[in-house]
Image 1 (tube, rainbow, N blue to C red):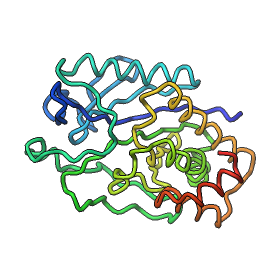
Image 2: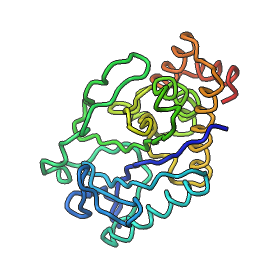
Image 3: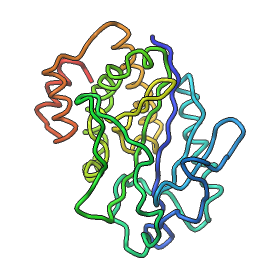
Length: 256
């Protein structure tokens, strides 16, 4: 199996005890440029628009990955106001009262790219200006991802993006803003895969699914396999449009 490191920087929305969604702005501290350190070994958090974002250290095994995701979520919980708790939603329409500051209107600190069109993705816009979304981006570190970033991201679409259309049952609204097929950023250590929402961080089984799908994608590329153009079109159709026929064809061919 191909060796790699894996990390993530998921976002989570907050609710108060009355069940109202609350902005994190001004409650946590930290930003994209200077995160709030939670440890000396890479755990950190920050305010990303109205959502909490957390960062974990790079991990080399599934056991480490699961432990760090769950431990960092608990660290963040410990520095939040006690009347707020995590919500599992990946797309929320916030009330005007929670968006009444400049920070609530800052989206995306740097561009990302489409591994299928080979172009920069346009800045997201939704007809509902109060819609906010929460990602569950996966960071992959490996020589293979450095040498073949496009192929790795396309394979991650196959083994993660496509099955996520069945597992992330509430993920549709997020795709008005983010979560398009092949969304990624180049990184010095490899790639940041940006298609997934945060749905997978809330259970052991789904954390394992995210790790295993990343492993399968890298093993696929390492073995010299390629995704034919017609299958790439199916992948994009499945993720963009939740196309059942495209999903069934890909499942039959690749046992996803």
